[in-house]
Image 1 (cartoon, each protein chain N blue to C red):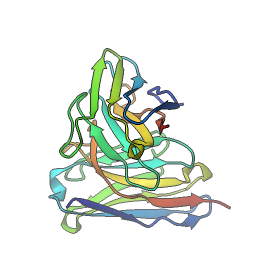
Image 2 (image 1 turned 45 degrees about the vertical axis):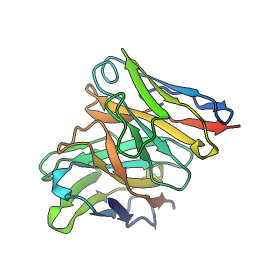
Image 3 (image 1 turned 180 degrees about the vertical axis):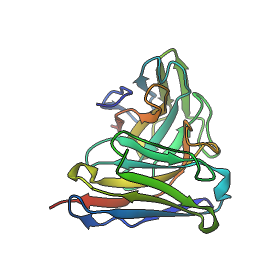
Length: 122
Length: 110
């Protein structure tokens, strides 16, 4: 069974940093690109960042550029999102998802985790 | 404002059919495949349709997808109360170099 389990979400203050993790099982991790998608309260899904199968190619939404860093450790079947200089508007559920191919410019995501909640508040 | 446009809500009676529309532009739907996701409250989003009209294993054929030009459609037949959820279209935007989603459509089964 394919499983993705996110962790690391918590309440932080503006300008603080946080690292989210996503541990996967049930599939060969390095056969797939991976992505982070978030959903702010009352809002829709928003793509945050993606990484290719070996971690060497990455892409970021404008809202994440310069502040967030996506990475992966294929030996640990893990995906990460390091978030720096957090803002109130970064408050959201953060989902990790498996991409439909090995790249980072994938057009669909076929397995998702349950999400982890990040709250940025002073 | 989302790059892809969806109606905020749709509703229909159990057993009926509903259609959810998604509108984009030449830089996204016009040149890329569409995917559709179902998001039940408190659950992980689920891929329903990929590459315009393909269903992943396990998705019933009550769900169908199509695309024409810069618009796409998700159809759901034989509506069940369990289908009440938010539905999102998604694709790749070549100009933004980003994955994009619609704003979501809340389906109510009356």
